[in-house]
Each structure stands twice: as structure tokens, then as C-alpha cells.
Image (cartoon, rainbow, N blue to C red; front, side):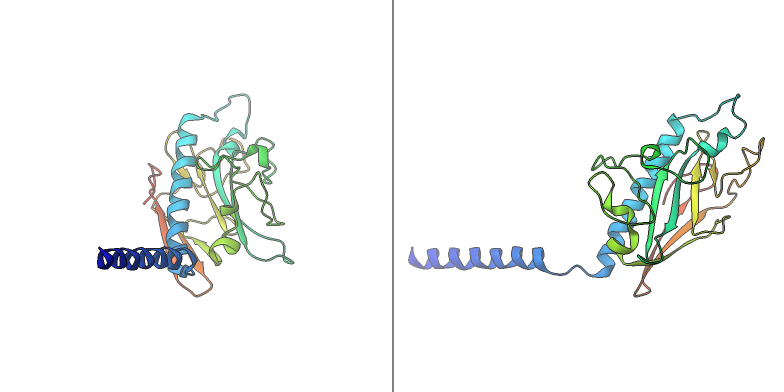
Amino acid sequence: MKKASILFELILIIVLISIIYVIFLPKPNTNRLEELKNRITLYLKQVRYQALIDDKYDEEEALWHKRRWTMKFFRCRESVGGIYFSIYSEKNDTGQPNQKESLKDPLTNKYIYNNNYCKESLENSKYTLLTKNYDIKTVEISCNSTDSLGQISFGNDGRVYSKLSNFTNEQYAYEIKTPCKMKFIANNNKFIEVEISSKTGFVE
């Protein structure tokens, strides 16, 4: 009985040490990149679904297509540094989305939004801050048609766009014709890629 008790105690100690080790062991950057890939994939699927059920067509609004659901990447203020993104459907067509126009994270019920101050808040998802949370130094989008880091917009017909046209009657301008790759590069030069299919918007 005494030997069994000692063995049990040893097993319990080993289990406790293992748990503590897992909890407090610093996560390598590859794990953070894997987490980022999973989250970006989830967000892209969510915004695609949102676009499919939320038809933005308005025959009385010439630039209705500028209100498509979009994931867009931005740089933080120079004094702050870093990269962030927002997912939104803009209502005022200025190119500057606000919080209330943004989609909510299905897991946290927080807005998938931030601004160039790049600060965490109780209302916004912290996962939009790519540099702060994932050590990302840059984002490369193969289908980028903008002069910034880039964006992806989804239509309710499944089409995918690399930019929102500023001209009337150009609702199909900037539609991607080949798969679009998003590449997220960390400061240690490791990276992950997410691919969006043309025509369907499926995410891989």
C-alpha cells in the first residue's frame, strides 16, 4: 500500500509539473503563425458568408458596390508602428471604415476593427493587431490592386474583388480571375499563406 501511495504521488507530481510546463512555456513563433492562419481563415469564411446573405445592390445608389463586405489591411501610425486589419461594409463610401460598420467576431462578439492608433479595447478584437499579437512585419497579397497593403472584397454572387471601384457602373471592376494568396511574414521571416479562390471565394 505504501509503495502504491508513493507511486501515485510521483505520478501526480509529474502530471502537475507537465501542466505547469505547458502553461508557462513560451510559445514558439510557428505556433503563433498557425493560430493566425486559423483565425484569418475563419474571418475570411465569415466575411464571405456575410456577403452571400447581405446583398448590397441598390438601383438608386450608383456606387452601391463600394459597400461590399471587405477585409482590408492598414499600417498603424508611424509613432506606433505595425500592421492591423478591419472587416467592414462601409456606408459613407469615404474609404475610412468605422467601428459600427464592422463585422463582429463570432467567438468573442467583438468588432473586427481597429484604427491607426492600434490600441486594444474592450469592444474591438485584439486579433486585428497583427504585429502586436503575431509579430507580423508585413502582409503580401498577390492580387493587390491598391497602393496600400491590400484588401479583399466579397460580393453576394460569390465573386471576389481586389479593390472597390470609385466609378459608377463598374461593379465588376477588379474582380480577381486567378486564386489570390495572402502571405503573412513574421519578423523572423517565417510565414504562412492563405489562398482565396476566384469565382467562389472559397478559402484554403
